[in-house]
Length: 168
Image 1: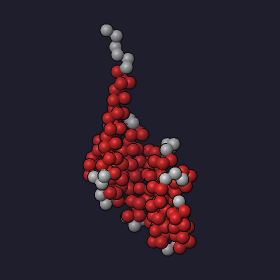
Image 2: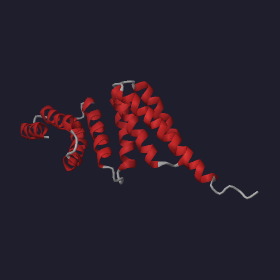
Image 3: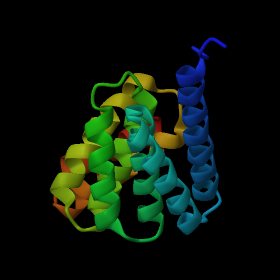
Image 4: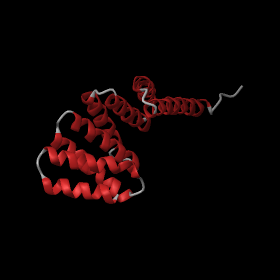
């Protein structure tokens, strides 16, 4: 009997499918506020992604871990996972995902009181969001920027981002 040449291809497909299922379950948990469950599912997706060399899955898992950690009030862990996701996604062509990731990372740093660092990531997210201009999901981003600038006492930047959030 000839060896099955589709075996390795089929195995990679099954592994990819498992990763996507765990990622979807993690997203569902996060969207319903079940952050512990979301974290557990994202960690499973991360382990599978790492073992199979799936960088896209790894980046998505780190992004979901970041969001779950932020939802659980663990901003330090959220920032750490967000930075790992950002490193993996840096060269991707996914502007919406980059916007969301940069926004989560900035909000994690904001929650820690690191306003200058938060501004760095939130402004990068704002560049993506303004280029996309397709979703009101990003309005909190501009409010977040305005609040960061209020915290570091820069009223002109505060006014600029407050105006953008009202117009977006």
